Length: 253
Image 1 (tube, rainbow, N blue to C red):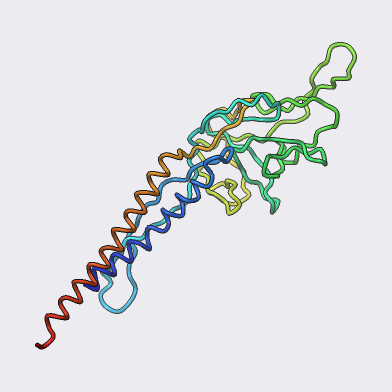
Image 2 (image 1 turned 90 degrees about the vertical axis):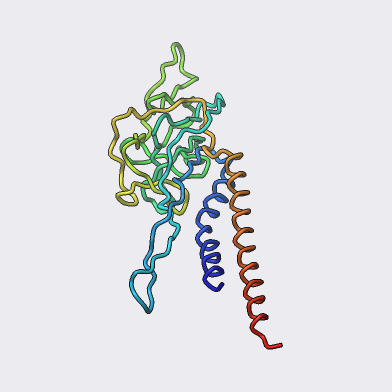
C-alpha cells in the first residue's frame, strides 16, 4: 500500500510542470503576440540511493521551446501596429540591454522619440541600434520592415523618406527559448542574433497578431488536470483505507 500511495504522490508532483504551463498560457490568452511553448514531455531518471542502480522514475520536464504557430490577425488600421508573418520575429532590447526577440507588434514612439512596443522594449534597427525618429513626421511601416516618415507640412508633393528598418529575422530554422521576462532568445545563447532562415522575413502593417493560445483548449486541459489530481488523491485515500482494514484484521480478538 505504501508503494501505491508513493506512486500517486509522485504522479501529482510530476504534473506540476504541465499545470504551471497551462496556467501561464491561460493568463496570456489576450496578450498580443504571445506564443505557446511545446508540450511537456517525460523522461526516465535514475533514482539515487541504496540498492541496485536499476530503479528509474518518470519525470516531467519542459525545455520551453517556442511554437511560432500564427495567432489570429487583428486589423487595427494603426500605422504603427505590425503583425509578423510566418516565422518572423522582431529584434528588441531587453531590460538588461541584451538582444532578444518578440512577436509583439503594438509599436509606439516614446517621449525620447525612440520606437518601442507595448511592453516598453526598445525596437532594434537592422544595424542593431535603437530606432530614433524625428518629431513631426507621419510614420508608417512597410511590409519589409522599412520605417518611412512623411513631412505633412511639406509644400507640394509629400515624399516619404526612409528612416530605418526594423530588425526582422526568419526563425523557421532556429529554435527559440523563452527568457524569464517572456521574450525569446536564440537556443545558441542569450543575446545572440539569429541566422536568417530560408523564408522571407516580413510583416503585415496596420494589424496585430493575437495570442496563439486557444482558451477553450486550455480550459479543457485544466479540467482534465484537475480530475487527474482528484483521482490520485482518491487512490491515496483508498490505499489508506485498505491499509487500515488489513491492520484491523491482524489485531487479536
